[in-house]
Length: 303
Picture 1 (cartoon, rainbow, N blue to C red):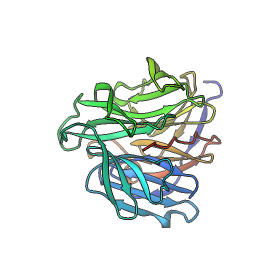
Picture 2: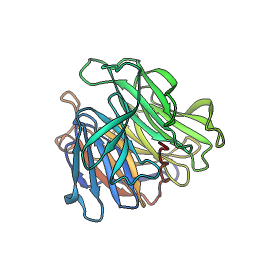
Picture 3: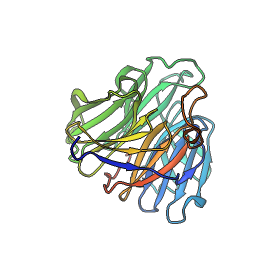
Picture 4: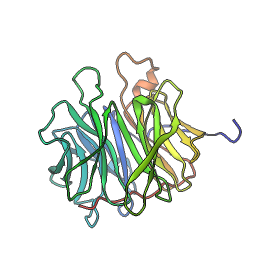
């Protein structure tokens, strides 16, 4: 393929052996990267000026899938989190949280929050899926939208693994990944009303792995982690595969831009997964590679 770009992630920036590392988020003002471990119910914080030794961990009692900043609130004090039963505000210092919206009127023990993001209108989009320890995942998940003022709105239902959500640089296209479909979908996004319409397939993955988390760069490319393939795909705004980052472990979960560096989260491999000793040893590590592109700044939730 002409002009196909490749990068290789080397030694881990940090190897915590996360059970399921996910949801990296950059706090630009403080130069802090945070990310979660869904299985171990943790939120990790790393001050990038001080390096890996600055790692700080907040332990929770429920799975945490994703985080976001809140408009007008210092993220050193409080952040938004997608938890087991819905959307909550986490007091970072105390490690305590309070739900502001639930996924269901009555808590459903079968489900947990997965990935999500805040849209240009300050609303939080969040997917739900079958929790761990309940056998095979079922098509009981959904994609919700929360605006901080009214009840949740269910946008899609009967989903298996709803994953990342993001927007084009002009804010007129919204992307959503349904991992087990191996597809990234696009919607028209109305910049005035925030309404979505005209859902269509933007990218269909033909590999053995499943598209997981992504971020959009300033040129409109999607940088998309692929679980069980050991790589991050660079997908153009036209939906064409134009590059990849090779990662030395298989379960690649999500990415986050910090300047021109791409931080990459991963997960530990299962006992039955075919992998080399190195791939197993690096499962759950955090990687960093300079890709020469810059990501879009995330939006803040309007509580």
